[in-house]
Image 1 (spheres, rainbow, N blue to C red):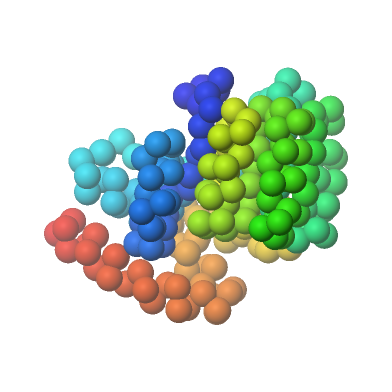
Image 2: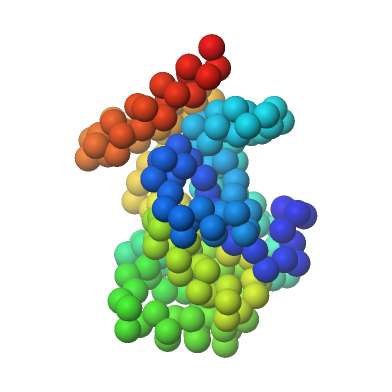
Length: 211
């Protein structure tokens, strides 16, 4: 956490799917900011690049560490998920972290004509941390525009608010420890099968290089 404190940076969660599908725009965002390995596939890829001291950093846990440490000291702004989910997330945060210095929040359904208003709102509230849970590449694009207008630490969170609010269950601890969280998500969300099948080539490539 100390690495990004005081910086105007975007923290991008990097996983196998994002590595495989990243377009030039998303790659540029990662290169200019801070990418962190949010999945075991990203850890494998980094190790293939010669980085041995690499560990998975789940985004679903990372943002809560920032809240836990700075909830009274720093200003926070939350963007993402459906209205009932962001509301449930905020309610739980207030319950868990009394004195949370929340300066604003809104759902993640932002039309093009609403975008400028959101950017102005964040700029006026001057948060130190902005959490954006909209999925990629939408969240990275929005965070880039926000950071150009207001310097802060921006973190893309995907479906983290769904999990925190209780709408979506996270894998059991033993599956997380065995690096099978992806499998749990596939079983509980069968519609992800198409996305997972596209990663077979990525996994085979990682295994081939390892052996």
